[in-house]
Length: 360
Image 1 (cartoon, rainbow, N blue to C red):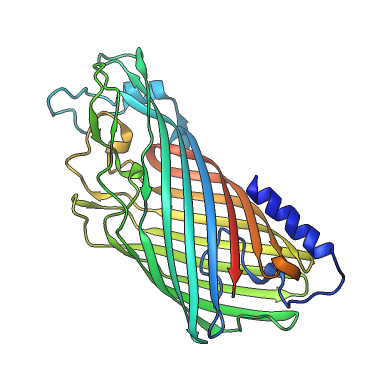
Image 2: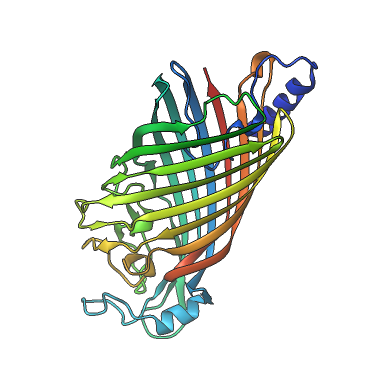
C-alpha cells in the first residue's frame, strides 16, 4: 500500500505544474533490479531501499518437471548408509517464498569513485511434504520452515570509465565498473523443526539454500554499459559473485555469473518503461556441512545451482519538482522462461522488486 501511495504522489507532483525544477529523468537509472548501474559526482550521497519477493514451486531435473511421488520412489538418498536413513529421498519441498529487504548508501568523495554499502534482511519460508519411512507414496504429513535474519553486507566502490553522472544531452554513453566484497555477516547455522519419515519432529540445522548468509568472503565485480538515444535507453550489465575460501561449516556456495540487457522508453520526463532479459548461471555447493543431512534434496550439495533466463518488465518514476523532486520509485515484475537445474530442485515461479532511491 505504501508503494502505491508514493507512486500516486509522484504522478500528481509531476503534473502539478508545467515548470520543471530539476534536470532529472526517469531513465537516468537502470531498472530497479539492476544494482550498481551508476556513479555520482563529488560530494553526492544516495540512499536506497529495495524489497524483493520471489516464489518457487514444483521441482525439476534439468529442464524436465518431476513430481514428489517420482522423487521419493526414484531418487537415491545420499545419506542412506547412515543409521535410520531410508534408501530414497522421503521429504520433498513443494513451495518456497523469499522476501529480502535491502538498504543501501552511496557517497562520492571524488568524481572518479563512488563508495557503496548495502545490507539486507532475509526471510524465507519453505513448505514440505514428508512421505512415510517405508517405500511407496504414503504421506506422513506436511511441515514448513521459516528462517529469517540479517544477510551478508556488501562494501565497495563504483568507478566511472566514461560518461558523467548527470546526462545533459539526448544521446550519451556511459560505462562503469564495480569492485566490491561481500562480508559474511549472515548466519549459516540456523535451525528449524521438521517432520521426519518416522513421524518425529526434531530441530535440525536447515539446508544450504535456507541459510541467510554464505559464510565466505565473496568478490562481487560488475561492468555496466548504458546509452540513450532520445527517449530510448539501452543497457547491459555483467555481475558476478566469486566465492573465496571455505566457510566454518566446511563448504562454499557456487559462483554466480549474471548477464542482463534492457531497453527502456521514456514517454515523459517523469516516467520510463523497461523490458529486460536476465540470464544467470549458479554453480553447485562445494564441500558439505556434516550437520546438514537427511532424505531431502536440499541437503545434497550436488542438487544446487543451474542456469535460468528471466523476462522482466518494469517502470521507473521520478519526482521533478516540489517536495518529491529527485525521489525515485522503481517496480519490476518477472518470471523465468528457461530453467536447467541441477535437480531435483525447486523451480522459480515469479519475482517482484519495488525500490526507492534519493540522491542529495
